[in-house]
Length: 468
Image 1 (cartoon, rainbow, N blue to C red):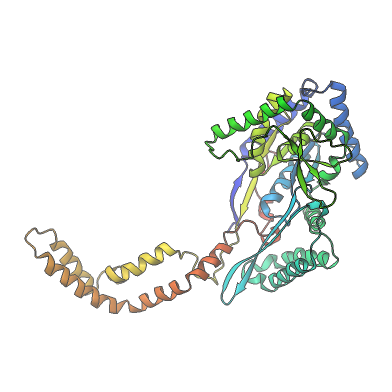
Image 2 (image 1 turned 90 degrees about the horizontal axis):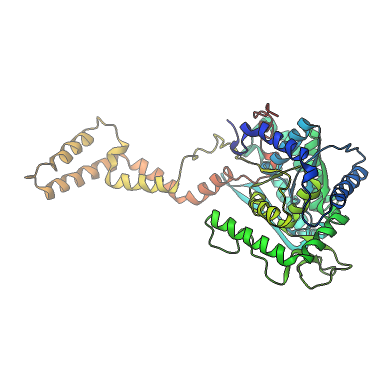
């Protein structure tokens, strides 16, 4: 049975995507954004490639860059699916694959793990949140111990929720995280290392780069300066693009997908060196000597202008990019490099040891009601009481029948039949008493954000990627 529940990627358009990338590259000489000369724009693109060449000690040799990005976290399959696609497209085009680590966001780690209690399972969730950005954040000792203990508990119970044939691989990754935590490695670094391990184990060639390093380049500084100097024009393009997006998607909440820019704020953060927290950069604020960080829109705007020839978003990032597409045309007067959206949902397979996969609250309540008023549903159709009840029910159609007397007979028959299905009633009542635990167990098997190593990730390899 497949663990893949849904895929957000149209495999029939693989060739179309490849052609769009090549077409954009063919026309790149004519796609000079507003505010740039040709020399400055391509100088910045070259600057990024030279920076990456030096960092990774590889030659780009005029190669295209296929990329994606995500905050550092313990990856679930939906995140790694983007990496797999990035690698496949890059190999098809003899391009370089890049994963951008968004380590400039405020820290938030959500780690979901299954855990047993008596004969049931439930979600064990660790939520670590800080206003410090990822690149500056370090776990408290109590948080580190909590994660280690949860993972050790997970290791001892894997046989409850994953098939035996890939427990050893799951244990390898889980123990890898435990080992790094015990060495006081940060969660951000662990996210990098475990992804590197997955790449190596699956022959995936992707280079990882933190956004905190890329934004030190002059291309990002130029983008901040350009938007600041043309703020009114940019703000109009930004807010009108959001208004169009909300209208198209029938969104009434003006904070979604992100709020409008007001008259005082730029679409960037500035880092507080004391607290390692972000605050919005004000229009009239001097930013000399400060570290400026991108917000959601300006992050991929920077990447698609200077770094990426094709960018793969998840569903969340895809919402922002719909807005960005409009801003590129209104403010920069160009179409940016192409992008697409990809995601995949895995569920654990409900094992036979749990025999309540099909139990739900509505069905259970209906069964208990039927025991009371329609107990014949749980008896053989040849049962004498069942046959007699059908005859009496048919008499209701007779206009001259004594309805009160018929109801009384049915109540008597129901009473007799209920005695015969008493065991069924007891079973249903027992199930109702443990329904909360049953529903929590079922939730474990429909959760899509467990660490990737709890799922059969090799299923992705068996998908139809032939068109690449």
